[in-house]
Image 1: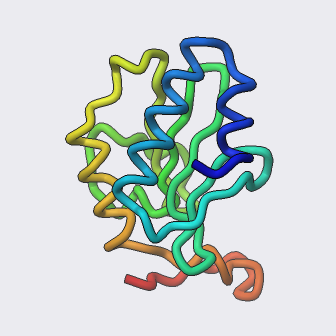
Image 2: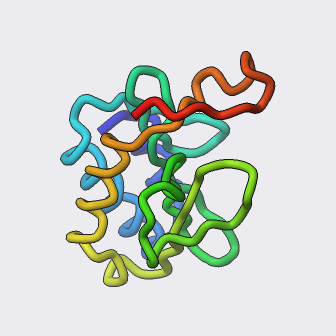
Length: 130
């Protein structure tokens, strides 16, 4: 695991650490070609410099966010905004993580991508890559 991601996980409380470690392990396992790093203070995985998936600690729990998740058309993923293509799910316990769902979402994250890498260059306009 990326040392910066591990440091982020280690800085969390015990239960949150379990959630973060499990997510990081599963993301790295199912997206071995993805580069992980701390981006905007949170762990994020990238494919060809395009953000794909990441998580962050928020009041409702650990938010697992897929940058193109709205296009996955998954009922369990919440679409919070309307401007971008992101969708997420919150976890408060490692037991809440369904490994089958997570695997499916990670496969979709690889197959369905919107171009966030060039969003600034396109003045906020997203284009679908895959």
